[in-house]
Length: 250
Length: 227
Image 1 (cartoon, each protein chain N blue to C red):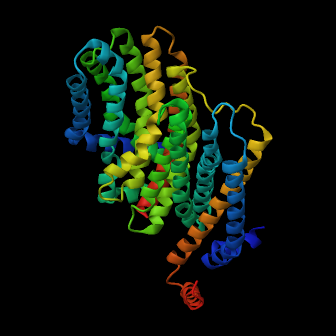
Image 2 (cartoon, each protein chain N blue to C red):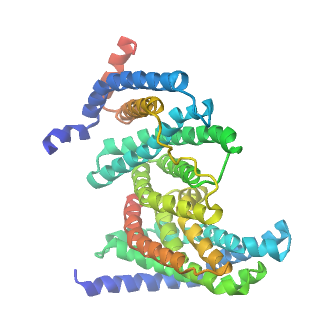
């Protein structure tokens, strides 16, 4: 397995591999997001209690799921970067963090928009909302540290350590916030208690979740490709690559 | 490498850090003054009524403690980094996490422990009911080693960046949240007359976890920064 994996520690090999994946990921993302959101927003039946406003779930839930998934992915990349000193993994941190931060923001924003008609307030100090907000801060911290150093390599390693420190803390923060919430306000609003969804709603949601997964993967792939190209610009293959791409007008 | 010499290194480093810090006392006193001044500002801002002040006292004292930990963080590695002794620390034939734990302990002795001793004064100023003073000091006693350890991680990560102050607070404050929640909850449950046993045990567990893992992160961060 290591013999097979080893070439991908090099920027060029990873760049080509990601290039081969990108069209498939993009196509799958477009297909699943279009079907999932189209079905969810236009054809799924309205909720008997929440009416049409529940439909934001088709964006909110996938975004929230992959905001956390992306953080896990980033932490795995950070571990690989620190343990095996693989530079591609360092760049992957920079590729994943902004995507994850945006997903977190989308989850927070759609949550606020959903919260207004449902609970009558844009923001509630609810456990899930609060830990999602803290997740956004953690992403911003990793990004800020990554770009704070003049030497990109140092920044990447520092950000990798921070991402790992963060991933140890995420469950602690999550449970402490849950606990804090239950202590302070008891059972006021717990909205995500899933009243087992009917199939007509669940199917588009699942499709939408798959769509967001492919979308996240496609965005990260594209960003990682850009990052590799940017960092390897001094290498002949990268210059050649850029020359070729310029000729083809890509 | 035998065990005894690792301990010798550790002791020497702690003695050295103590000596250096005690020659610059203002660095120790200023974060404490900061806490007292922040605590003084709150009655002026929200009014001196005991009902409001007693209600927010724990939160104010703890937030002030978190912020002062950030203020005192530069002292941990900054001077050592600038004069090159941090590199010598890395080169020592002793495990770097152990040495990091030594530096964290000294930092706690000079920044954390005085805060615990200062807590009754802050509690008095904020009219916290006297029954809760003991638990407030206990949470600070358990929580400040955690603060020192986490701050050391942040300080080691940002030491090579001239001015890391704002960045440091961005990195560290989210990680302080569990500490803040459990400490405030412990005092709160004492105030309402229930046992704070569970919260205190949770805090103690978190402290042990942090003191176990943070030195490893500090060591990794120092290696990155010195490189």
